[in-house]
Length: 218
Ligand code: DX5
Ligand code: ZN
Image 1 (cartoon, rainbow, N blue to C red):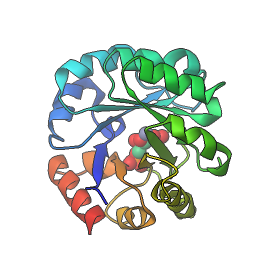
Image 2 (cartoon, rainbow, N blue to C red; image 1 turned 120 degrees about the vertical axis):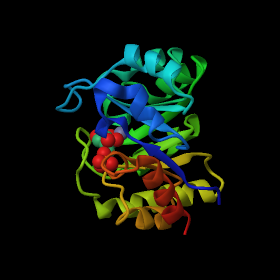
Image 3 (cartoon, rainbow, N blue to C red; image 1 turned 45 degrees about the horizontal axis):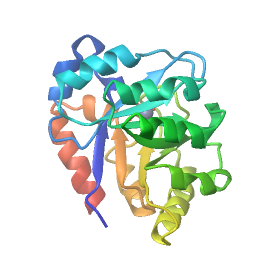
């Protein structure tokens, strides 16, 4: 298998100093940007103008996680402003295939996110349209929540679908990933690990990234 990827989430960073906060996690594989609209989730963060500025402030590929209604309308703009990967929620989309294709046509990788209660089986046949599958291991909306272990079989099912040759996907996990939980998520078959509080809550965020990556590879 490939080297595990770590994607620090800026949600746990200081939003007044985003360029500095990105620099504190140099060496990360992706920088995870949580976009929330106070409709799909009960929290509000940032949008495309901030992603556009961030793109110029860091070389780390930006992994935008859209927790918004009507991603069909909004997702391609994130590709246009320079996101490397644009992930939207299956539950919010009107047409997941069309939206994936629009993101890719605008120049980014496309990701599909599933809330904890959303079954993978329902989306298996559209996953061929995607580069990334984001398995939420908390209810989306806030950092610092506890990892839901009941999601491990969903990660394993995604891994099985990829390994059987049916799909080519980065399997990403998001929510409650830290030193105590990353090994289980890795063992279940995840490739990419989002970590907010576990990275930005550390004294040395870059060192926290290296430690998490080593744990995931073990
Ligand atoms: C939650 C976000 C996560 C969040 C994770 O809705 O999607 O990316 O930042 O935070 P931690 O790692 O603290 O659970
Ligand atoms: Zn996220």
